Length: 492
Image 1 (cartoon, rainbow, N blue to C red):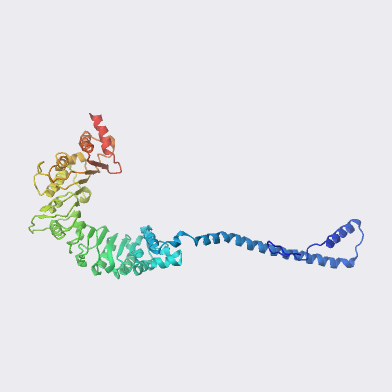
Image 2 (cartoon, one colour):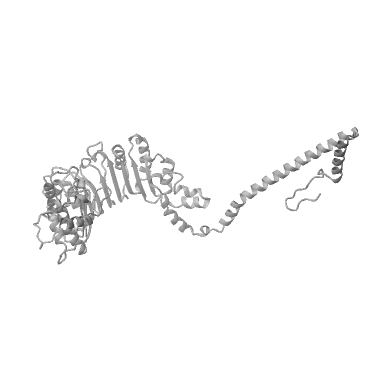
C-alpha cells in the first residue's frame, strides 16, 4: 500500500483483504449451520489471525509515537516563533550606552539590594550581552545598600559590588539594629574598609554596639574623598565620648549629620572649610561657637541639642554670612549658644520644640524660652517695628507642644510675623508660615477655644493678603484654619 503524503505512515500488508473478509464470512456460516470445519485448516488460520492482531498493535504503537512527537513539536513551536520574532526586537538595536542608562534607572529595593536576584546582579541573568555589559559599568555597582537585619545580605554579592565598582566613588548605606549580628557587622565593615579611599557618601543607622564598630572602622580608614557622612545611633552609645577613636573628619567633607546624644561628643573636630550642611549635637556653647567660626561656608545648620559644657573663654561677636537655613529647639542652653552669633542672611528658620527632650509644663515659661532664643537671633536687640530683625527671613516653621495661641500671645514671634507684612527697604517679606501643634488640649475641632479662633482670625487675614499659612495638628488632622474660622463665627 502507498505511504501517506501528509504523515508519512505506511500501512503494512497485514490489514484485512477481501479474501480474509470472505474467510470470516465462511466461518460464521459454518457456525450457524452446525457443520464441521476441516480441522487441518484451523491452526493455520489462527496463526494468521494472531499475526494480524500483533501487526495492528505494532502499527497502533507507531501511530501513538508519531502523535506524541507531533504534539511535542506543536507545544514548542509558539516559543520558537517568539524567539524568532525577538531577533527583530527594537531593544537589540539600542546602543549600549542607552541600555546602560536604562539599567541605572531601575529602582532597587533598599532592603534587598545585596541579593543575587536583584539588580544589578539580575541583569546578567537575561543574556550574555547584558551580563557582559552590566559587569563592565562600574557606576551600576557603586551604590551599596547593606541591611544586616534583612537576613539576605550576601558577602559574595558585596565583594562583587566592591570589585566591579572600581574605580568609581562609593555610596554606602549601612543599617544594623540586631546586636546578635555583630560578627556579620564586623565582616561587612572589614570588606568596606579595604575600599574606604573610594567612599564618597556613607550613611550609618545602627544600634549602639554596631555604631561603635563603625566608628572603630572610620578611625582607621582613609576617608580623604568622603563628602557626605550620616550617623544615626539608636540608644546611648557605650563610650562616654568618641575621641578615643581619634576620628579626623576629612577636609573634603561637605555634609555631616550626627544623630547622637550630646554625651557622645567631647568636641566636633575637623577642617570645616568645605562643609555646607551640618546636623548634630554640641557639648556646649563653647564648642558650638568654635565650630561656627571654623565652618565659614556653612549654609544649612540643624542643632539637635546643646549640652552644658563649661566654657570660660570669652567669645567675640561673630557674623556668619552664609547660613540660610537654621533648625533648633528652644532651650536655655540653646539661647546661650546663640549669644554673640549673628545670622543676617537667614532665610528659613525652624523652631522645633521636639529637639529639646522633656518640656516645661508652664506655657509662660516655654513662651519665654522661645522669646529668649529669638532675642539671641536678633543679637539681643530690643525689637521695634522700625528695626526689622532677620531681614532676609522668608519662611518660618514652628513645632510646639502647647497651644499656638499661648505661644504667640504677647510674644516676639507674634510681633515678628505681624511686622513682616508691611516691609520697607532691604527687608524681605515673609512668604510662608508653618505651624505644627501637638497640644493635648487641642486635638479635635470641637475643642477649639475662643482665644485659638481669634489667633486663627489673625492668620486668616494674612492668608487673604497672600501669606502661605499651613497649620497642622499632630495625629494627621490638618485643616485647622477652616475649623477655627467656623468656631470664630460661632463665638461671635
